[in-house]
Image (tube, rainbow, N blue to C red; front, side):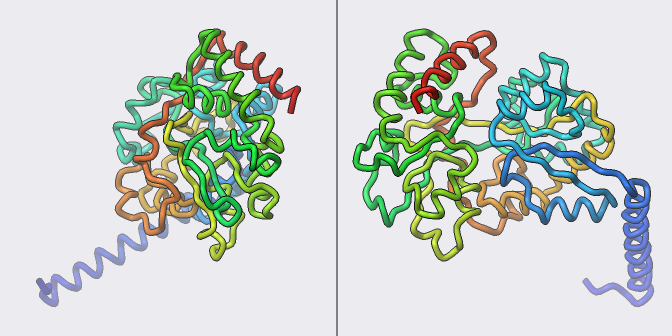
Length: 354
């Protein structure tokens, strides 16, 4: 219904005031944080530059962004004294470990007005941090397999592809013990969190006897570049990494899939380190990420389904390289406690041979 002239002018005045207040608020934020830096330690290919730039502009800060290829490397670096970071993005099992080690600051949910946008079913899976006292979910997903269909026109959508001798020397798997051993466990119908000697011996046999002879190497850093160059035809890895290295015209030659057996799944979370010097700004960044429009921009940039943020699903515009339904056969990696040493020992012995 059209407003009368007087009402219309009132609306214009209110809108103008709101706009002016918004500009003033943004300017105030920028002035308040002038000269500050927010230090983020995140996975490679995991936060779009455009989102970071918008945060920098709105808050008048510089974001210093470092990245890591595995939870193990991230954890080792911080434990060794690399604690100048404000926000880190560990997977759930390492959130649990970092909580136990006293490495994290509590999350002040009063500062997170967008926390309610997070899918309750995702929050319900965060048994690594009950009640999300120390962590806020960022993304729920899984590693999968990318295949160059021009080189490998026929294949089974299964972990068994790494047992194909005809592809020897053209395949890589992640240099990540929980991923690779978890894949082998799922392939044999076991839990990705199995700790019995019998289950781990079975997983080791699959990796060492069936897969390793056909792998060029274990690679968690350059697999996407090698796949894009044609050096590798089949790689285990993350969809966002693979497609980021491919020109759009070449993407039709690639299929990315989560194997039918499932595999390790992750909830990567945003946590604030105990020694952070910018806790308020860190909370602001976490809240910024969960604005629906920002989260939609994030998942669109990497071809993700919007697994964590519900209202972002209606704003998402681009395709997803896999569906949320593909994750149903997958299983979250848990903190293995003392049993992690069993994995470490097996992995080191496997790595000696590769």
